[in-house]
Image 1 (cartoon, rainbow, N blue to C red):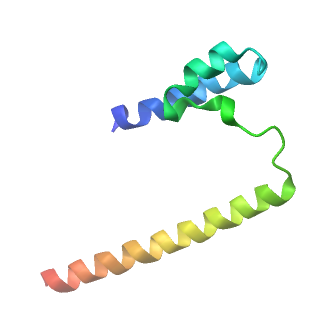
Image 2: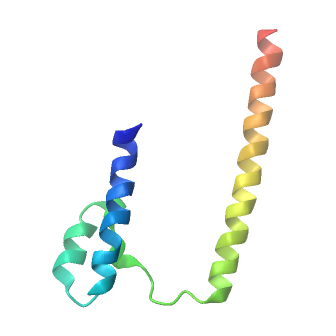
Length: 81
């Protein structure tokens, strides 16, 4: 599981480096060559509406995923027993 999370951890580690100097394009573009490390593509100010919308969409996606996994596990359990 660690190799899967390594690009995401690397992106989080490199994120502050790019945010400190957003005008120096070399670091940001070098990190953007890897899709998971694309920290220079962060919008400067998304606004409160976008943050609320993203939070609401995240909660809806979380609930839908829980329902789907429960439904699938119930189907597997019913089939196996």
